[in-house]
Picture 1 (tube, one colour):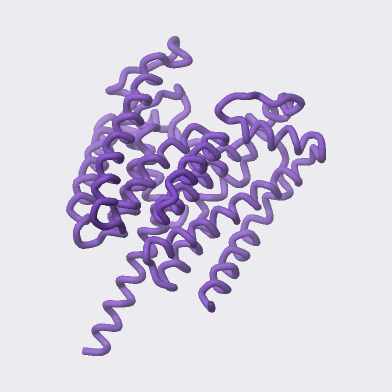
Picture 2 (picture 1 turned 45 degrees about the vertical axis):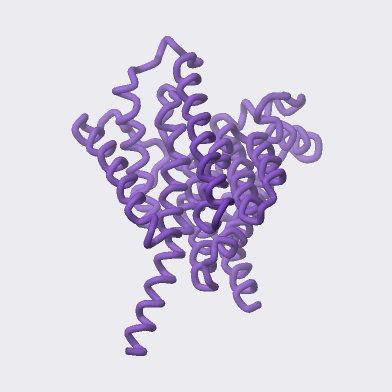
Length: 329
Protein backbone atom coordinates (compact mmCIF):
# COMPACT_ATOMS: atom_id res chain seq x y z
CA UNK A 1 0.00 0.00 0.00
CA UNK A 2 3.04 2.29 -0.13
CA UNK A 3 1.99 3.82 -3.47
CA UNK A 4 -1.33 4.94 -1.97
CA UNK A 5 0.44 6.89 0.73
CA UNK A 6 2.74 8.38 -1.89
CA UNK A 7 -0.23 9.47 -3.99
CA UNK A 8 -1.75 11.31 -1.05
CA UNK A 9 1.61 12.94 -0.28
CA UNK A 10 1.82 14.21 -3.87
CA UNK A 11 -1.78 15.45 -3.72
CA UNK A 12 -1.05 17.23 -0.42
CA UNK A 13 1.93 18.91 -2.08
CA UNK A 14 -0.33 19.99 -4.93
CA UNK A 15 -2.79 21.53 -2.47
CA UNK A 16 0.08 23.26 -0.68
CA UNK A 17 1.34 24.67 -4.00
CA UNK A 18 -2.05 26.26 -4.67
CA UNK A 19 -2.48 27.65 -1.13
CA UNK A 20 -1.52 31.23 -2.14
CA UNK A 21 -4.77 31.56 -4.14
CA UNK A 22 -6.72 31.56 -0.87
CA UNK A 23 -5.78 35.20 -0.47
CA UNK A 24 -7.26 36.17 -3.86
CA UNK A 25 -10.63 37.87 -4.29
CA UNK A 26 -13.46 37.77 -6.83
CA UNK A 27 -12.55 38.67 -10.43
CA UNK A 28 -14.13 38.81 -13.90
CA UNK A 29 -17.28 36.64 -14.08
CA UNK A 30 -17.05 35.82 -10.36
CA UNK A 31 -18.97 39.01 -9.64
CA UNK A 32 -21.83 37.98 -11.93
CA UNK A 33 -22.04 34.54 -10.33
CA UNK A 34 -22.00 36.12 -6.87
CA UNK A 35 -24.85 38.48 -7.75
CA UNK A 36 -26.97 35.61 -9.05
CA UNK A 37 -26.15 33.33 -6.10
CA UNK A 38 -29.36 34.28 -4.30
CA UNK A 39 -31.34 31.99 -6.61
CA UNK A 40 -30.75 28.61 -8.25
CA UNK A 41 -30.71 28.50 -12.04
CA UNK A 42 -32.19 25.22 -13.27
CA UNK A 43 -30.07 24.97 -16.37
CA UNK A 44 -27.32 22.58 -17.57
CA UNK A 45 -24.84 24.10 -15.08
CA UNK A 46 -27.20 23.58 -12.16
CA UNK A 47 -24.56 22.05 -9.82
CA UNK A 48 -22.41 25.13 -10.27
CA UNK A 49 -25.44 27.28 -9.45
CA UNK A 50 -26.35 25.19 -6.39
CA UNK A 51 -22.80 25.31 -5.04
CA UNK A 52 -22.68 29.12 -5.27
CA UNK A 53 -26.18 29.40 -3.80
CA UNK A 54 -25.19 27.29 -0.79
CA UNK A 55 -21.95 29.18 -0.23
CA UNK A 56 -23.64 32.55 -0.56
CA UNK A 57 -25.93 31.54 2.32
CA UNK A 58 -23.16 30.04 4.46
CA UNK A 59 -20.21 32.32 3.78
CA UNK A 60 -19.75 34.84 1.00
CA UNK A 61 -16.00 35.26 1.59
CA UNK A 62 -13.73 34.58 -1.38
CA UNK A 63 -11.56 32.46 0.92
CA UNK A 64 -14.36 29.91 1.38
CA UNK A 65 -15.02 29.75 -2.37
CA UNK A 66 -11.33 29.14 -3.07
CA UNK A 67 -11.22 26.41 -0.43
CA UNK A 68 -14.04 24.53 -2.18
CA UNK A 69 -12.24 24.82 -5.53
CA UNK A 70 -9.07 23.43 -3.96
CA UNK A 71 -11.08 20.55 -2.51
CA UNK A 72 -12.56 19.73 -5.91
CA UNK A 73 -9.09 19.79 -7.50
CA UNK A 74 -7.78 17.42 -4.82
CA UNK A 75 -10.69 15.04 -5.39
CA UNK A 76 -9.99 15.10 -9.13
CA UNK A 77 -6.36 14.18 -8.46
CA UNK A 78 -7.53 11.20 -6.38
CA UNK A 79 -9.93 10.14 -9.16
CA UNK A 80 -7.09 10.39 -11.66
CA UNK A 81 -4.96 8.06 -9.52
CA UNK A 82 -7.82 5.56 -9.43
CA UNK A 83 -8.28 5.85 -13.20
CA UNK A 84 -4.57 5.30 -13.85
CA UNK A 85 -4.72 2.17 -11.76
CA UNK A 86 -7.85 0.93 -13.56
CA UNK A 87 -6.08 1.41 -16.89
CA UNK A 88 -3.26 -0.84 -15.74
CA UNK A 89 -0.50 1.61 -14.86
CA UNK A 90 1.88 0.52 -12.12
CA UNK A 91 2.85 2.42 -8.99
CA UNK A 92 5.35 4.66 -10.81
CA UNK A 93 2.88 5.53 -13.57
CA UNK A 94 0.11 6.25 -11.08
CA UNK A 95 2.35 8.52 -9.00
CA UNK A 96 3.58 10.32 -12.10
CA UNK A 97 0.08 10.91 -13.46
CA UNK A 98 -1.48 12.01 -10.16
CA UNK A 99 1.55 14.11 -9.20
CA UNK A 100 1.81 15.87 -12.54
CA UNK A 101 -1.90 16.67 -12.54
CA UNK A 102 -1.90 17.91 -8.93
CA UNK A 103 1.22 20.06 -9.32
CA UNK A 104 0.88 21.26 -12.92
CA UNK A 105 0.82 25.06 -13.29
CA UNK A 106 -1.81 24.50 -16.00
CA UNK A 107 -4.27 23.53 -13.23
CA UNK A 108 -3.85 26.77 -11.31
CA UNK A 109 -6.17 28.99 -13.34
CA UNK A 110 -9.05 26.52 -13.09
CA UNK A 111 -8.61 26.40 -9.30
CA UNK A 112 -7.86 30.08 -8.70
CA UNK A 113 -10.55 31.48 -11.00
CA UNK A 114 -13.73 30.84 -9.02
CA UNK A 115 -16.02 30.87 -12.08
CA UNK A 116 -13.92 28.01 -13.46
CA UNK A 117 -15.48 25.70 -10.88
CA UNK A 118 -17.57 24.64 -13.87
CA UNK A 119 -14.44 22.98 -15.30
CA UNK A 120 -13.63 21.26 -11.99
CA UNK A 121 -17.11 19.72 -11.72
CA UNK A 122 -17.15 18.73 -15.40
CA UNK A 123 -13.75 17.04 -15.11
CA UNK A 124 -14.85 15.13 -12.02
CA UNK A 125 -17.86 13.83 -13.93
CA UNK A 126 -15.69 12.72 -16.85
CA UNK A 127 -13.14 10.97 -14.60
CA UNK A 128 -15.86 9.13 -12.66
CA UNK A 129 -17.62 8.14 -15.89
CA UNK A 130 -14.45 6.59 -17.32
CA UNK A 131 -13.69 4.75 -14.06
CA UNK A 132 -17.23 3.35 -13.91
CA UNK A 133 -17.15 2.30 -17.56
CA UNK A 134 -13.89 0.41 -17.04
CA UNK A 135 -15.58 -1.51 -14.23
CA UNK A 136 -18.58 -2.31 -16.42
CA UNK A 137 -20.97 -0.04 -14.53
CA UNK A 138 -22.36 1.87 -17.47
CA UNK A 139 -25.45 3.15 -15.65
CA UNK A 140 -23.22 4.79 -13.04
CA UNK A 141 -21.06 6.12 -15.87
CA UNK A 142 -24.13 7.80 -17.36
CA UNK A 143 -25.00 9.34 -13.99
CA UNK A 144 -21.44 10.60 -13.69
CA UNK A 145 -21.81 12.33 -17.06
CA UNK A 146 -24.96 14.02 -15.79
CA UNK A 147 -23.04 15.15 -12.71
CA UNK A 148 -20.35 16.62 -14.94
CA UNK A 149 -22.91 18.41 -17.13
CA UNK A 150 -24.20 19.98 -13.91
CA UNK A 151 -20.89 21.81 -13.93
CA UNK A 152 -20.48 22.43 -17.66
CA UNK A 153 -21.60 20.97 -20.97
CA UNK A 154 -17.94 20.05 -21.62
CA UNK A 155 -18.58 16.84 -19.67
CA UNK A 156 -20.34 15.42 -22.75
CA UNK A 157 -16.89 14.39 -24.03
CA UNK A 158 -16.98 11.79 -21.26
CA UNK A 159 -19.40 9.75 -23.40
CA UNK A 160 -16.66 9.23 -25.95
CA UNK A 161 -13.78 8.94 -23.48
CA UNK A 162 -15.52 6.28 -21.38
CA UNK A 163 -16.05 4.11 -24.43
CA UNK A 164 -12.52 4.70 -25.71
CA UNK A 165 -11.24 3.58 -22.30
CA UNK A 166 -13.17 0.30 -22.65
CA UNK A 167 -11.66 -0.11 -26.10
CA UNK A 168 -8.22 0.45 -24.59
CA UNK A 169 -8.37 -2.33 -21.98
CA UNK A 170 -11.48 -4.30 -22.92
CA UNK A 171 -11.63 -7.63 -24.75
CA UNK A 172 -14.00 -9.56 -26.98
CA UNK A 173 -17.62 -8.51 -27.30
CA UNK A 174 -17.24 -5.63 -24.84
CA UNK A 175 -14.65 -4.04 -27.11
CA UNK A 176 -16.89 -4.51 -30.18
CA UNK A 177 -19.83 -2.84 -28.46
CA UNK A 178 -17.61 -0.06 -27.15
CA UNK A 179 -16.29 0.59 -30.65
CA UNK A 180 -19.78 0.88 -32.13
CA UNK A 181 -21.03 3.09 -29.30
CA UNK A 182 -17.93 5.27 -29.55
CA UNK A 183 -18.71 5.98 -33.19
CA UNK A 184 -22.32 6.82 -32.32
CA UNK A 185 -21.36 9.01 -29.38
CA UNK A 186 -18.70 10.81 -31.39
CA UNK A 187 -21.13 11.43 -34.22
CA UNK A 188 -23.73 12.74 -31.78
CA UNK A 189 -21.20 15.01 -30.10
CA UNK A 190 -20.05 16.40 -33.44
CA UNK A 191 -23.65 16.87 -34.61
CA UNK A 192 -24.49 18.75 -31.43
CA UNK A 193 -21.39 20.91 -31.78
CA UNK A 194 -22.22 21.74 -35.39
CA UNK A 195 -25.79 22.62 -34.39
CA UNK A 196 -24.58 24.94 -31.62
CA UNK A 197 -22.12 26.47 -34.09
CA UNK A 198 -24.93 27.09 -36.61
CA UNK A 199 -27.36 28.74 -34.20
CA UNK A 200 -24.83 30.64 -32.09
CA UNK A 201 -25.50 33.10 -29.29
CA UNK A 202 -23.85 36.19 -30.72
CA UNK A 203 -24.40 36.21 -34.52
CA UNK A 204 -23.28 39.82 -34.75
CA UNK A 205 -19.68 39.00 -33.83
CA UNK A 206 -19.29 35.59 -35.46
CA UNK A 207 -16.41 34.75 -37.75
CA UNK A 208 -16.18 32.13 -40.47
CA UNK A 209 -15.23 28.52 -39.77
CA UNK A 210 -12.05 28.94 -41.82
CA UNK A 211 -11.01 31.72 -39.44
CA UNK A 212 -12.23 30.16 -36.19
CA UNK A 213 -10.75 26.65 -36.50
CA UNK A 214 -7.13 27.76 -37.20
CA UNK A 215 -7.30 30.19 -34.25
CA UNK A 216 -8.56 27.47 -31.92
CA UNK A 217 -6.00 25.01 -33.31
CA UNK A 218 -3.29 27.56 -32.51
CA UNK A 219 -4.62 27.86 -28.96
CA UNK A 220 -4.72 24.07 -28.61
CA UNK A 221 -1.11 23.62 -29.74
CA UNK A 222 0.08 26.45 -27.47
CA UNK A 223 -1.64 24.92 -24.44
CA UNK A 224 -0.28 21.48 -25.31
CA UNK A 225 3.28 22.81 -25.48
CA UNK A 226 2.78 24.78 -22.28
CA UNK A 227 1.58 21.60 -20.55
CA UNK A 228 4.56 19.62 -21.83
CA UNK A 229 6.98 22.23 -20.47
CA UNK A 230 5.18 22.50 -17.11
CA UNK A 231 3.48 25.83 -17.65
CA UNK A 232 6.07 27.60 -19.81
CA UNK A 233 4.40 30.45 -21.71
CA UNK A 234 1.29 30.35 -19.53
CA UNK A 235 -0.57 33.66 -19.49
CA UNK A 236 -3.98 35.05 -18.55
CA UNK A 237 -4.96 36.40 -21.98
CA UNK A 238 -2.79 35.39 -24.93
CA UNK A 239 -3.44 37.55 -28.02
CA UNK A 240 -4.00 35.00 -30.78
CA UNK A 241 -4.98 37.71 -33.24
CA UNK A 242 -1.28 38.60 -33.50
CA UNK A 243 -0.35 35.08 -34.64
CA UNK A 244 0.35 35.00 -38.43
CA UNK A 245 -2.20 33.19 -40.58
CA UNK A 246 0.45 30.72 -41.79
CA UNK A 247 1.24 29.75 -38.19
CA UNK A 248 -2.47 29.24 -37.47
CA UNK A 249 -2.87 26.81 -40.36
CA UNK A 250 0.37 25.10 -39.37
CA UNK A 251 -1.18 24.48 -35.95
CA UNK A 252 -4.18 22.85 -37.62
CA UNK A 253 -1.88 20.59 -39.64
CA UNK A 254 -0.01 19.74 -36.43
CA UNK A 255 -3.21 18.53 -34.78
CA UNK A 256 -4.05 16.40 -37.83
CA UNK A 257 -0.55 14.92 -37.73
CA UNK A 258 -0.96 14.20 -34.02
CA UNK A 259 -4.27 12.43 -34.70
CA UNK A 260 -2.57 10.31 -37.39
CA UNK A 261 0.27 9.52 -34.98
CA UNK A 262 -2.23 8.39 -32.35
CA UNK A 263 -3.70 5.92 -34.85
CA UNK A 264 -0.22 4.49 -35.42
CA UNK A 265 0.49 4.32 -31.68
CA UNK A 266 -2.75 2.55 -30.86
CA UNK A 267 -1.44 -0.99 -31.41
CA UNK A 268 1.93 -0.73 -29.67
CA UNK A 269 1.56 2.06 -27.11
CA UNK A 270 -2.09 1.83 -26.15
CA UNK A 271 -2.02 3.91 -22.95
CA UNK A 272 0.03 6.63 -24.60
CA UNK A 273 -2.44 6.67 -27.50
CA UNK A 274 -5.33 6.80 -25.04
CA UNK A 275 -3.85 9.85 -23.31
CA UNK A 276 -3.50 11.79 -26.55
CA UNK A 277 -6.93 10.62 -27.72
CA UNK A 278 -8.30 12.17 -24.51
CA UNK A 279 -6.61 15.44 -25.43
CA UNK A 280 -7.94 15.47 -28.99
CA UNK A 281 -11.51 14.47 -28.05
CA UNK A 282 -11.74 17.09 -25.30
CA UNK A 283 -10.49 19.74 -27.76
CA UNK A 284 -13.09 18.96 -30.46
CA UNK A 285 -15.93 21.07 -28.97
CA UNK A 286 -13.60 24.05 -28.63
CA UNK A 287 -12.61 23.72 -32.29
CA UNK A 288 -16.22 23.71 -33.47
CA UNK A 289 -18.36 25.71 -31.04
CA UNK A 290 -17.78 29.44 -31.33
CA UNK A 291 -17.38 31.61 -28.25
CA UNK A 292 -16.49 34.89 -30.01
CA UNK A 293 -13.46 36.72 -28.66
CA UNK A 294 -12.91 33.96 -26.12
CA UNK A 295 -10.33 31.53 -27.42
CA UNK A 296 -9.21 28.30 -25.77
CA UNK A 297 -7.54 29.28 -22.48
CA UNK A 298 -5.85 27.72 -19.47
CA UNK A 299 -8.85 27.04 -17.25
CA UNK A 300 -10.78 25.46 -20.15
CA UNK A 301 -7.78 23.17 -20.69
CA UNK A 302 -8.33 21.58 -17.27
CA UNK A 303 -10.52 18.74 -18.60
CA UNK A 304 -7.70 17.82 -21.00
CA UNK A 305 -5.00 17.48 -18.33
CA UNK A 306 -5.98 13.98 -17.06
CA UNK A 307 -5.35 12.50 -20.51
CA UNK A 308 -1.94 14.13 -20.79
CA UNK A 309 -1.12 13.04 -17.23
CA UNK A 310 -1.92 9.41 -18.11
CA UNK A 311 0.24 9.67 -21.24
CA UNK A 312 3.07 11.06 -19.11
CA UNK A 313 2.70 8.25 -16.60
CA UNK A 314 2.85 5.66 -19.39
CA UNK A 315 6.01 7.25 -20.84
CA UNK A 316 7.80 7.33 -17.48
CA UNK A 317 6.85 3.72 -16.75
CA UNK A 318 8.12 2.54 -20.14
CA UNK A 319 11.36 4.49 -19.73
CA UNK A 320 12.04 2.89 -16.34
CA UNK A 321 11.20 -0.56 -17.71
CA UNK A 322 13.69 -0.10 -20.57
CA UNK A 323 16.39 1.06 -18.16
CA UNK A 324 15.85 -2.05 -16.06
CA UNK A 325 16.07 -4.27 -19.13
CA UNK A 326 19.37 -2.66 -20.12
CA UNK A 327 20.74 -3.14 -16.62
CA UNK A 328 19.74 -6.81 -16.64
CA UNK A 329 21.29 -7.26 -20.08
